[in-house]
Image 1 (cartoon, rainbow, N blue to C red):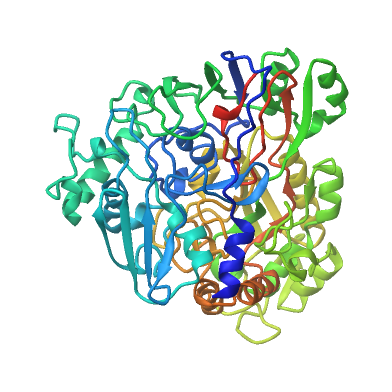
Image 2 (image 1 turned 90 degrees about the vertical axis):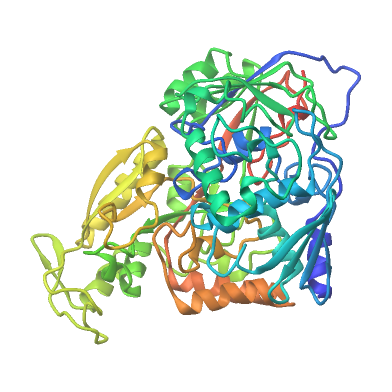
Length: 594
């Protein structure tokens, strides 16, 4: 417990993420912010399913309007930010089985207070529809909550099924909660919005909560009404939507009723969508973007951009990058479950060369699910060491020593069976190593990486059939599935920006690699992984538990690790001040000014 408390103190802070006021502040003005190519917001309801669980929908969109219970990122540092959170630090008691949360004085834009009942509303939906929450891990939140209640308007109390590490529970469980306004507690647009915290509200029963969820999720699919739907106009964040297009252009204006610590100083904040890096860069060169990004292919023009009045800054996120195999694929799932094959695929990724050549030096290798950068207390030696350096010779040797032979330039299983020199349990004789790889379109370095990966694979007899699709489609197509599902035919997928640790901010991997987890895209299922994840949740010595977890997954390769690019190489107008590039990719334009 002493160690857990120490981690909370070290990683947490009560300092504000926003810049201090300046005598030269000029109120007003519009910031034009460039969305990453093909990564447009398309889900507004802050109870996001896996298919829409992206930074474009959460950190860069929903959080501007609907604040999470706990906000993460202190400027550009890793950790919790209590100043920008809706609640005070949680208090753990009864041997870490009871958690008490006290809300601060925030208000919704319809004039009602943000209360404990709004937290209960979110929890009721989670209990009823946990399978539709992307961060759900069976056995974890909310399964580990025996009961919850609101003894008064400012207090929420959780009773847990046993003791949990406070750092983990705060960073990865309480962090998931976004209080919801009772004005949303309805089953149709025709029904009357709630005006009080009556226990008779629809969400108070599991059946009623399901109906409310289905209604809100359906409303969130109607992108054309985001700015006009009275539901979404009830906000507690510093911003509200003035207009929104189905292509993803979002125009935000200040919420005049915002009760948080930093009120917006700019007049408008506009997020602009792009179909390609080049389209974004053309607008950046014209000077029409206040805050954009430099495609890696155009980094040589950084000096020119500086002459136009831009600061060039890498934005490093707290996350890791990977390609994902579909372990549920009815044809290739058994093959992906063979460690030798995963090792062979990993041997084909020349991470140092990819960083130098394709990422132009603005990236870092990934060797485990625990990030190396930005600087943090969580990565150990295993996460900084390359167990699988690039080697086509080693990859080929692994395949030949496990029952494969080269036929028509493609490795094919010759010896079916589960012996040490066979193809592996469930792999049929004649199975050829020919895989379909879907990756995100519109980003030049991804195409370069995939071309190199395809070339290296061909040298060892693995045929990769490459295809591209927009980012949102790749993420949707690579959703977790069961072998019996018609949609479970995808094989390999790569959206290129991996995983950013939010809302599970401690890198323990439960929602990524726990069996049945909502964001376990490839459906990895392994008893040892589950046990190690559980240990990171419950051990008083969280450092040792986290080390054991990352060491194991660095060896077992549940995914194909790829170098993590900077989220973007930002180009920020020198006229714009107060910008801190949050490692969880949360943005706070309310603290920006001209």
